[in-house]
Length: 603
Image (cartoon, rainbow, N blue to C red):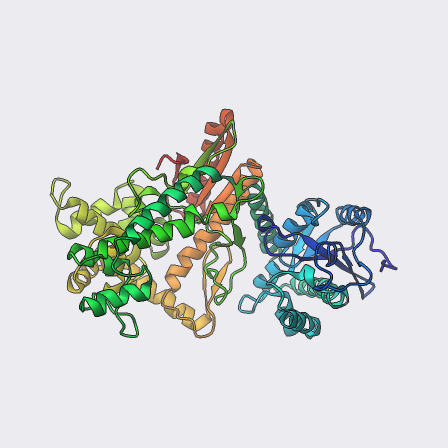
């Protein structure tokens, strides 16, 4: 059970955890810790159970004889021993959360400062077109054949265990699996460091990604305070309101029953069709039905909006709250095109989407005076919440990368781009009765046409985001006029698409490449160049914010940062972070960049 040849303090140690779930806020804890290291070419690997099975499970479900779990003093000794070494992990952010939380019975230790390598992150840097998971990577590189994983999978399927409950697996099945994970991790580390030493990758890119991982880990640890009680009270009122609406509907409020009522009972002509030719019943279709006075359409639309709001926010948020009353999202740092993450380099999130906390303008169909989900987030006593957002980031960066002369001139003059576009393309002025409509069309055009969208996509965007309907011929005419006003974009879009077809990637910034998977369309190469560059900027801005102002970052949302700051330091800290973002952005992109700052809830 105990190592026979201990590593020196400078020997990297691979650490892996097996847990009772995926997220600590859902009650997941550490049940097994495995370690591995290499001495003189020989790998040593060991695994120890601390919460495996019979302590809290019925004997008839798990028959362990005897109890394999080690006592508290062994747990304390292990984590303190790990704190004295350089640690290597695969998906370090996950294992750090688990080791900090500890077992079901004993608290853990924060080991973030001990981590020197994350093989999952490096895997994505070295082999960007391959899966980043430990098992497929080990199999691909000849570091493991997956035997232990197959045994685990068979046991889980045979005993019908809940997903993620590795603590329910007998130790004789779990031990070889856990040991193999640590062994594969250290061997993958040895292979990766050798490849980088041979010049395959700039080590500074690894250092930066590791620093970003640690920043994300710290942000997740902090979370955001949330008023659960108030949110639940509002949710109860919304559920009562929804029930009242249900009682007025002539059908059960399900998609199938609604489609039957509108398209069979009322025999309506479809407002829209799906790709398979079936009648579509989405929000746009229901809104048009409401405008046409179709019976029950307005009520069903409101019912749907209430259901979405309840599921996503008013009930969804309270169901995910941590024991400390704070909400935490989980950031994906490595993305694969088939795993739900974004491949541009921008962070996507798991468990709960705090990148889409809705503003009031996005919440429709709720009773007048209903608090927005944003209003339930609040700072600690004596603190303030601030949201800092990069101004028109995509427009400015795209203008520079496309070298659009006219748009760059307008940016340098700090002109209102959307108003200029409206005046040029509609010949209108601010006194025109349709000025707001023209400016909205121009705004949506500026944000989408820089990436070359066509008439159909533009019409859909305009209707969804601005509630403005436009005939296809009108949209085509507008797009043609816009492209004449800003001609450099289509030229750049074509060039980048050709470049990606030829090379399999598009460069973004700082030596970064956005690789395209086999069969993936490259017509969005320019879009990905811009998005990838902004993703790299957002990382550096966050890292620098954390470095200069530790412990204030509580949320990242694409090009924005949310800060929780002591009141007496708030204005000075906000001004400093604004300067960091604006100066860094201007230096990176060679175009004036600014940062908007608002107290949370002011917009």
